Image (cartoon, rainbow, N blue to C red; front, side, top):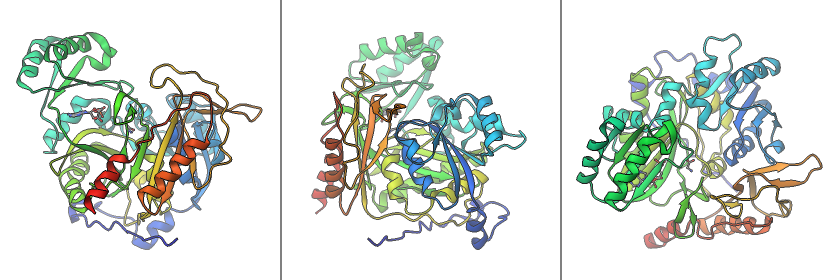
Length: 465
Ligand code: AMP
Ligand code: GLY
């Protein structure tokens, strides 16, 4: 299969380039491909997909995954380290000669892993923002203020605390239903309430402010409801104005088919996204990516890592629903398939603050993923169910999320989201057929998956025909 190379040659304004580049084009790639030891933090499907991609790099000496899962061991060495135990990580880095840490999930970033290592002897490179940058995800109020300062399109909003709850109720009265209430801080993906009834919204505002999500909802952002279709745009930035836009993906958040029922960590994903065409992406780059990357730099916020833009298309116009400071899960399980270039030199370039003109080639094929989950998820669910069928799948890459390999080699479930079944296809139908086939072949008691992943995008594509 020939791979069409899209060099993603976005011309940046001269002022966005690092003042003095230590590399010329030839040197950049060479310098950045000397072998390195990498420590990847996290244990989900996202980290399994990152490990799969990093492990393919000729520039990799050794990959550790902390703590990893039942699938990541195929691509590197799992180590029992908590991503939040910075002292233990520091010791491990020194013992093993780790050159670079890739931070998969947001918690260590929001807790300041980048800042922890600054100025320390033998500090590794870190792919991920400073604590100040991680506030784009760690505080929705900060993110909204940042967007206001840089004129980035987002829903109209105001923030409230226990002292200003009466004003909050008044603000709700000014808005139209449905009402969107967001806990300011991290709330394990549960901190957003969308409520149809005004009185109920007021009651929820009071409950949130009196500790529904602990300290995370001591401040609540209330914002206008936006109606449209969502997509996830990922940017890898070096903090010096250099960036690459990774393949766009769409995820499916609700547990039930037709986007019904409670929110989950994500039930599937598709890339590319039919409506995120060139015209849309040009707007995204000009109105959102450039002001974000340049705004961070102008404010002196160190940010060398992934920016995840949760976008919504409202009448053809992109608006920001949220920032995350990491890759998406399960979007990574399709985005990694579509990156044709060696990812490791790009990660290194970002962490060193100099992406230079390193190419990012995109695979033109479709990639899809279907997540198989435990029965009962996102509510309570059993663990330890024996998983079979993983050796029998065809044309599918299984990215483990909630799995564990027992000492006797038995693979068992250990989480709500169990395995992401990712596949390529010449078109969306072929990729989805393979992902669904994989989701059918993987077997354990209580397995569930959504059979309508990608159905909305297929409908858009057939309307375009
Ligand atoms: P967040 O945690 O900010 O991603 O919010 C979770 C989900 O709530 C988003 O993916 C959207 O589906 C929805 N959401 C958040 N903010 C809005 C909004 N202003 N209008 C409509 N839907 C929203
Ligand atoms: N799939 C959405 C997220 O990772 O937050």
